[in-house]
Image 1 (cartoon, rainbow, N blue to C red):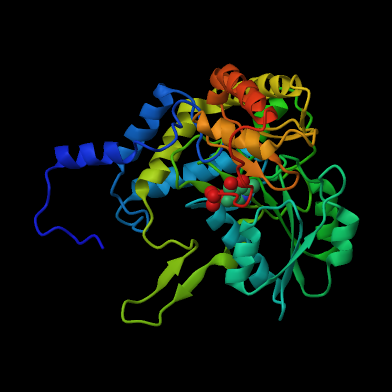
Image 2: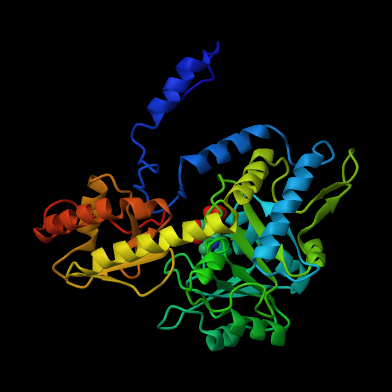
Length: 408
Ligand SMILES: Cc1ncc(COP(=O)(O)O)c(C=O)c1O
């Protein structure tokens, strides 16, 4: 077991050790990953790092000490609200990531719903973070099979509701397939039954608005859809900020009371928090603020354009391989599979991995899942060349098979 050293080492040696520690990591900067990273260019990387460093140790729990962070955080939330067409009187919270945003939304729905044995109803394409949140919060999860288009089956979701249901969920888009649920119909159902509707736009919050500007026809997915109560939108995904940045946005700021903690049960007076974190990194807020101000709508539109270019190039290259087929879709998520029993996609995945690509496997259907970001437009041809070689190898029955057992 590694013990804390008695005497410390100098930084140069530690720096070398950290660099060496990365030696076997996949290269995100060369676009070798289709999960876990979002990268545009070195100019944005500098903004991310320098903005973070400006507030690298400031504690965002202490906004009395750091009015700067209170202001930056409020501005990030306002920019998020206006991007997602929130009405007057809306509010939100800056959180550490999609999971925290979703946990808080589910907590608020449970508290507002006030049921003895609360349950939540969601399409089975929704992120497992809802199941994690429900587990923490003592709620039942009712996953309802999506329809043939991999969209929320609203009638079946209604049938799954009962008097103990506190929330409906839709994704914009979901992570497995990149499809955007029927949010308007879910909103109508939520209003009719007095339920909380949460839209998981962790992936789409900072991408959908710009896909729409580029002419991609998305169904209504944000606060424009009546009945949407809350939206999670990750700034550390397509918002392009460093990790540790997401928004939970509420149609009505007063709903924040339902995920507000307050207690005086100790010697220090009142402790009030709207987030799961106590101490919170100021750097995450400063970097998110700077990235949003730096990119502006034009920068995000450019990211969306590059992602769509990556999608078009990779989808065309995959479809040109006779035994492979892409699932339909028009988002940053692209899934493809083998249509020929003689070609094992598990073998293709292993051969791609051997060429330095971190492969994200899909279980249903047995396939390969790509979550594209701007950098993939630049490496699409390299990816396709390696894919063709991987397929040739797999056709010959060479190499290992990569199991599809784990999402992460
Ligand atoms: C649609 C969706 N929701 C929620 C999450 C969870 O977000 P995080 O990993 O930032 O906690 C993810 C993560 O990939 C996601 O894709």
